[in-house]
Length: 437
Image 1 (cartoon, rainbow, N blue to C red):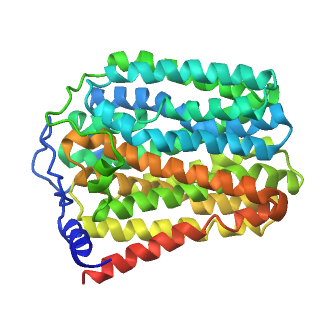
Image 2 (cartoon, rainbow, N blue to C red; image 1 turned 90 degrees about the horizontal axis):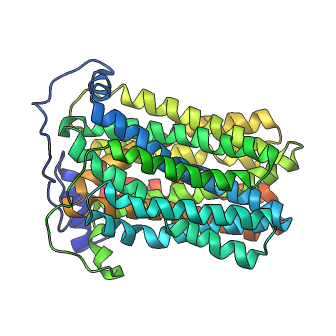
């Protein structure tokens, strides 16, 4: 990185709380916080949970996200049931993630222009319809030529929804508590990763297609709960044309590194998600046990996130401090995934996943905090959706990599690739930071 691009990163990392990426400005807050004070551990979190708007937001956003945590595993199992091959189910999971990655930034931009959460009604209804159709298609053993396009559409229709919920947060939470809100949000996301795949695994014991059908119900539940959330009017500002070129400001300075981190986590998660079920069969366990292992990983991640939130005391932490921690945790996540390819025992697999998971939620929380500081108010949903798109693109690439390698290298060979990209991106992040010193 050189010249103007390097200066952009330097400027972004210099600020303690204000954005400095091109075109970004400090968002106006609906509620301004009182001056920061020292608090004991958990004080910021206790204050946050005392706010009714935050509790209602948590409930609604949790149902909206649950379907996304269920989809990769549900499509893998339902596709294998319908076609007789795990590799076909992996292609369906990859198609779902690719559809979400392609649509998320532009769907997020559309939602930025609408009143929220009212603007989520259409996407949530469409999600219910598509996944009901996909469940029936899998039940009647349709061909991959039918299942794959439906899976892609299943990724497109809810794209941007999760980002829109995050874009609501600055209107609900005082500025000094936003860092705590994003940290708790990362823990809650891990709770969804505990519940989603576990629910899919339990439903698959009755029939593999039930998990896909249940995703339709999660969308309808979120839709009903949205009626209890306060409305946010669209931020003022000129509309931005829906072109790839209009995304360029997001890929300058610090946001570029954060989006690359999301991509790296997505690739590693996609590899693990697609390769672990056949790996379990390889070591003599049932593929459905992946639901329980996912719950274990996410539980460990939630513990890591809670430990991280306990260190937040209502102050605004500097960007550089957060970035260094984020890159360290990203590297540890990648390194600790490597044993998944080497151990051949169910308990050892669970131990490796739990060790890696400790570092997942904290670095996700730090990414979200840094992004929110960099994004202009009028493009918050779009910017968060782009992060989700990078993660979904990573999921697609990881699932596709497993589908391509499964027959030749086996699941253990595919798993060897899981930790490479997170470690590489973390090293790049360290070099970017040191280049400014």
